[in-house]
Image 1 (tube, one colour):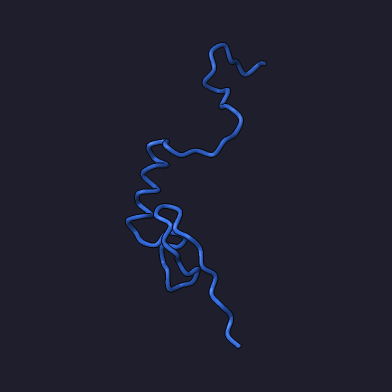
Image 2 (tube, one colour; image 1 turned 120 degrees about the vertical axis):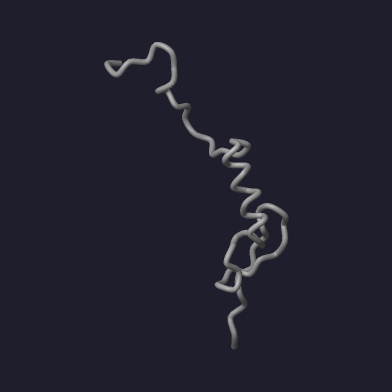
Length: 64
């Protein structure tokens, strides 16, 4: 009995990708999709929500 490989969808284009060493760009289907995603992060089109960075706020001092 062989185990079925895990299959995920490419976060960029939705193509199904086998999660194994056969897919070196996983979870992406290709280097192109990987680079498009990287470019979106670099251009700050994507972000992970979190608390605002207070270090750039006006009036902030280390003594507060």
